[in-house]
Image 1 (cartoon, rainbow, N blue to C red):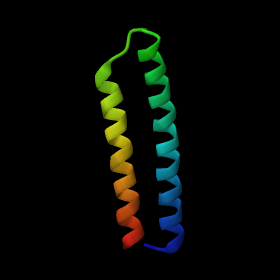
Image 2: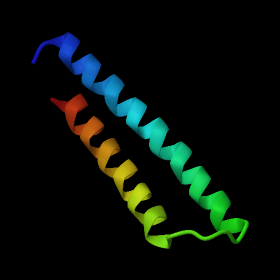
Image 3: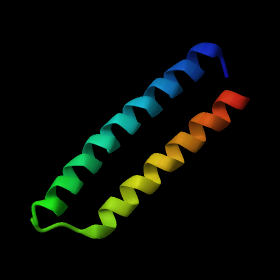
Image 4: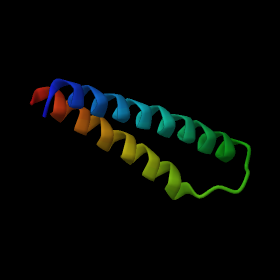
Length: 62
């Protein structure tokens, strides 16, 4: 992979993390305000953020 490709992949991963963090905040707000929410979505979102962070770390080491 070229350096530009790595940078674009890192940028995409960063954007995904930002999007997922916003979604996580929204889900937490729904939970606190006692609106209908699916608890498994909070867990899935947190896991997905962790997976993306792991991928970023692996890519940096290569």
